[in-house]
Image (cartoon, rainbow, N blue to C red; front, side, top):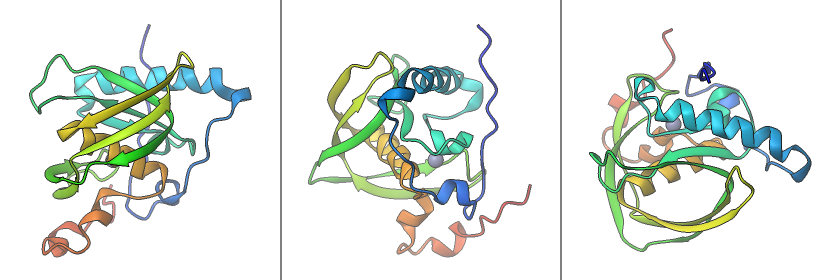
Length: 174
Ligand SMILES: [Zn+2]
């Protein structure tokens, strides 16, 4: 099957990226499960250069994300999962810092500090409810994508850091 080409929504002030997304409800579940699977194919395609994708980035204001669950940054066996209506149940007390980027903010990279692990519950595209602890870099990926569902971009998480001046010229130039 040919993977659908998504058009990625960009721009820190883009209203689509600043909207709190609504949950997927039962009646529309199968249609959105298919979309989630297409999003998995997109992220698995290394040419797209992303460890994750959230539905608002393709213009859909619903609570769906895809994340590759790396155990380390160079983990080639990592699986890529789709999470429908994900919720964080618990955060680890320890923090870690990773360099993050975003398909919606081309060329912007910065270090972000987040809890080092999160316990999430979500529904997968087969309608199975999954509860999972996710640690390390993958935890950053999942938190970054959940933020998208709440209209939050990673640059918002570094607003208090001294790098702000370098990180904020993000008005889209193309
Ligand atoms: Zn992003």
